[in-house]
Image 1: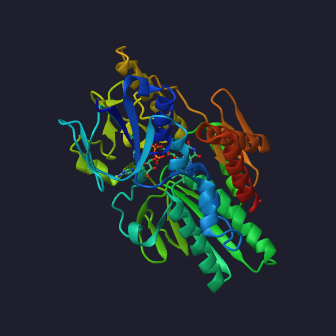
Image 2: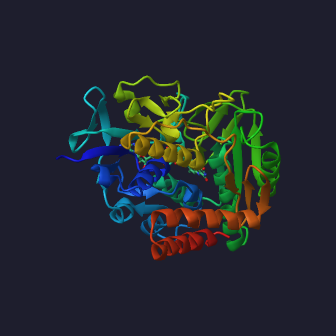
Image 3: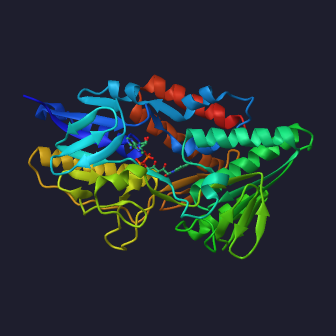
Length: 407
Ligand SMILES: Cc1cc2nc3c(=O)[nH]c(=O)nc-3n(C[C@H](O)[C@H](O)[C@H](O)COP(=O)(O)OP(=O)(O)OC[C@H]3O[C@@H](n4cnc5c(N)ncnc54)[C@H](O)[C@@H]3O)c2cc1C
């Protein structure tokens, strides 16, 4: 008898958590195979990307750094009976026939499917952004930013960096860039000067974050020399200038856009109704239609009490993944599904240069090096979820060494 199949598209935080949670429940006994599909051969650890973007070029080659933030999916999946990884890209779904269309493999049948293919940068059709700014979503983006900083400094002794978007990734990148450029200047006897400007459309940075955390972050950024320009909407960009709605023009050497996200490209080809941000609507079980689920950044999930859309973050993607895994297991075993019950708020740790972080743990907030150590411990716990102890330790050690290069 042909085994039944649970197909998961996207091996990011959501997809991988769903795959591993399902694999640990030995669904193979029920003749189910889990097929995890990703267009890349690796899982990307995004919370460490800002470190890669702000590391001296001579410190570590890109190939070495790649092993710090990416984990081969073959290695992760090989440990689990009934879980297979396939490198391929989703191009479409034939929902009526329960089939997924992949770029290289063609059509595959599924019994359950989880869409977890994440988000991409949203430029909101603002003229010049795609041509003249760098995005900050993946490893290639991080390396491009790092190389650009190096090439500007090779040609001149001052650098002007604009980071557009005062959300978590823009704030972390601004702090780490400030740290990096200050360290560089001190090594070069202050021959180098720099200016970092963080532009945010809202009146305050970190919209949606706790007020106390936001105030502390502002203080920290100012201490690091980052100039905050809030309440400023970007109108357009050209090769070297950013134009704001208040008619301000800011010249730059590097402009990085972290101003928004939307659903990944293939979502438009799926023939499924989309939100304005090209995300997928789901019901309380995180289903689009029966046996077809969406989780993580690609899903528009609202809190049942507040009706607020849940933020795009790792803890949210993981919580949704666990809920979907539970519901698939329940369904396979003939039990009723359980509605997804999100927390009112999810914990978040912001790394803000050197060994300094701010952690909002919902019940309390901590700052400075204790929050930094907590970030490292959370990281280790996650690596241990994916890998056996020796490999998790090795990866963690590599990460700590990369972090230390700038501190
Ligand atoms: C620079 C940066 C830093 C961040 N830092 C933090 C942080 O510190 N804390 C936090 O909570 N959140 C952070 N986030 C947000 C967090 O990374 C996302 O919310 C989270 O990764 C969402 O998980 P996901 O599974 O939905 O998508 P992702 O983790 O993005 O995974 C999507 C996967 O789908 C794959 N994929 C895409 N298209 C296709 C296709 N067509 N076919 C097959 N596979 C495909 C991709 O290769 C990827 O592996 C950060 C994001 C960025 C960009």
